Length: 267
Image 1: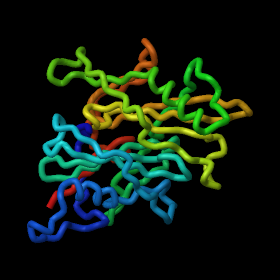
Image 2 (image 1 turned 45 degrees about the horizontal axis):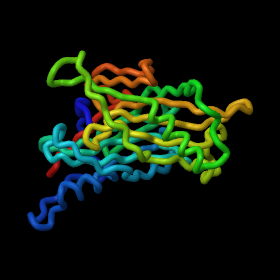
Image 3 (image 1 turned 135 degrees about the vertical axis):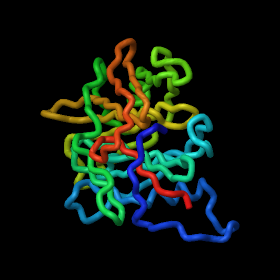
Image 4 (image 1 turned 120 degrees about the vertical axis):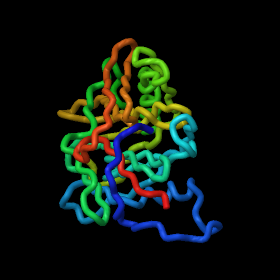
């Protein structure tokens, strides 16, 4: 969970929350799960069908949010995750911290008032995993390969209570947040053979996301990796002793960025 500056979205698709008797109101955990459906995410501006959200993690982080509770939802297209959002309460708002996982710049997020998010660049930049074995033919073996590859990465955040020179090492969750299934879709990208999302967490709150994908191009199969931020703070990741990814703090108001936070009043 990060600190992206909010984009107002008071006229969301679901409308304002009606006043209800206290006993009939959903709990904050129930409300967060319902909130996965408050906004429409589409693969491109011309699409007539929105992507369906699914919750991949229910997390806890009492250091970062008042309630300590949050969920992570993803939106997939043809078996591959294209967008994600951490959803949590902050003061009197429900926050959706959207992030692009797309290889393209065509994603669109909407509510009833119109477009709230339209990244102008791709959300992830993939590179080959150096010295990695070729993706195995067996799907179960490929998962073991991905877990071994993920273990070679580390991710860190600056320690806000000290200074940027001190860093908090994040914990890698051993189970992927999501396992791709591109073979189940007739319209999947032909180069994409497999993949998974891994999370580096504070508590159980994802701060940095690692994407691993098995791809095949010109008859050659390989593993590729990319990182996506799930925080507004600076972050970096290393493979062994080498820093392979880093981002500076970002509290941009720009809804054309790869990450943006949208807020809506809790009540």
